[in-house]
Image (cartoon, rainbow, N blue to C red; front, side, top):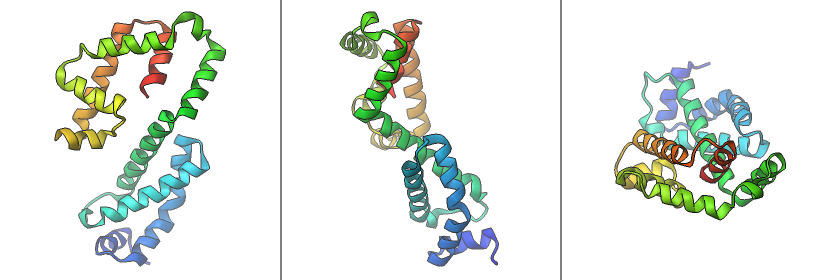
Length: 189
């Protein structure tokens, strides 16, 4: 039996048999990890496939001194979060969240959806130019963090910081009403 380091070196060299062994060692662990985040068997299976696809794509850049398990789980985590974000953007997920929120709060009596969107848009116009651009690419054009980073030629961390800043800015200007916070989370995820 080869060591994990030898398997990684063989995967880096493009040996499919080594890749199959790595897949066998980690696919179940990645599945349960993704399932714990997404709560969906189908989505967890997709995460496993995408994770190992990304590993195969990046195989030539693998570092021999890399601690492999955290690297692989980082890929799985990022794939899971990207999938979760895309699911939340889907109309069915949004409607489900709104129905659940409506049963707990009488949202229609507290605020009109269109008015809230207008308020958020007005507030976002007051953001600093670069943060406003990052915010719009993320929330209006639905680009991923990596797509925004590539488009603007900045790091993913800079994108994450810009989005975090923008969301705090908007939340601060909306106030502390818990219903507004719930709607804001629903609208901006």
